[in-house]
Amino acid sequence: MFYIITSGSANGVIRIEPENPVVRLGDPAQLMCKVRGPIKSCLWEINGELYTLQEGAKYQPLGNLQDGECGIQAYVTEQENGQWTCRVFVEGVVDRAERASTNVTILCKNPFPSIVKSLSINFFVPTKEKRNVLTEQKSLASCELLMEARDSD
Image 1 (cartoon, rainbow, N blue to C red):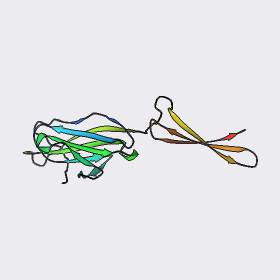
Image 2 (image 1 turned 30 degrees about the vertical axis):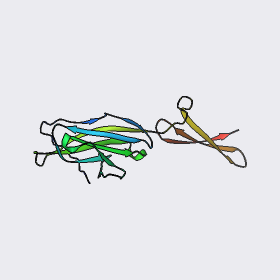
Image 3 (image 1 turned 135 degrees about the vertical axis):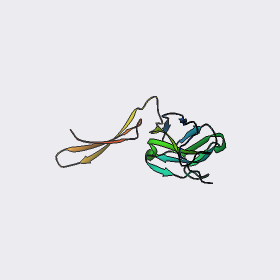
Image 4 (image 1 turned 180 degrees about the horizontal axis):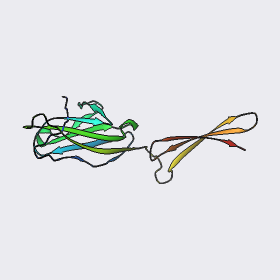
């Protein structure tokens, strides 16, 4: 079954729970868009791209549309870091959609959270005059790769 989320509640109140979640890379992100009254259809947008929710797919539906819930579950990658928006069409409201957005932050998994805050790996590139060191640093808090080249004595 496919679900499309758009906004438009009878009382104009729509919210996403939890607000601004932080999820580890590869873990499931679960967000629930809620309105008062039954939802006709709903849609989720991640960083401006619309997604169809389907059982067994990467983006799976959660909640019960009849209870005013339209949720999403996805095992996240770095591409899902950013703004998640739900749009909801509510039964009895024609041609009007309500929206709610939240920011989802994806963190890299740290196998040693109490010890290691960042990881540096040195690659030695021998040259005739000096040895160059290329350092790749993986920030375990933000999944960003930092590259730095320097000369080594």
